[in-house]
Image (cartoon, rainbow, N blue to C red):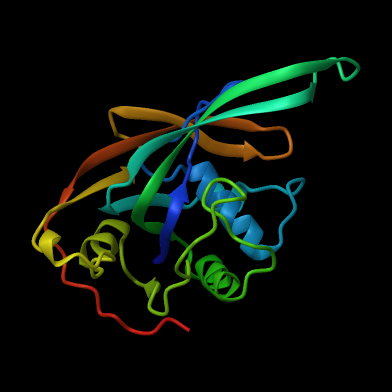
Length: 221
């Protein structure tokens, strides 16, 4: 068993789990479907291929900097309707996103698979984005010391240095969301097939980690 840590940092991120038509939501932390999609891009795995191996990984999120929830109002013109034949003059939509958030993601599973993902994130086949294609990372997702053989998910997330840089936040405890079959909360973001857009529920546990050590400020190349 091992853990792979990822850094998700960018000016804008969006992790919707219940978007419908003109309302595009975002959760307050990355969704599992979004993270698995990012891993597929790193591997160069097309949407038509199975994702069972990646979906079986247990995921946890540490919120190092809470993003500010913002909304964009869009109006698209000459939009093709669902019947594929007629066109609608205008289509308004509300699109929500997180600004300036910083997340540490942990994935727990077999070391061989995590090592493949570690190498893929270092040199991804396709571009990586944070929930939407326009939202690109401002710092590398890959962490030099992100592969943690023999560690457990909770311990790896708790011990890793803080990803933030504001000294005024030194000493703050950090919120976490961890996959737990006994968790009391359920979220519909466990992917079964991206080609068919099929998802099921998974259970979560929420809590807080004590304040971690400060960022090591090592160069990530």
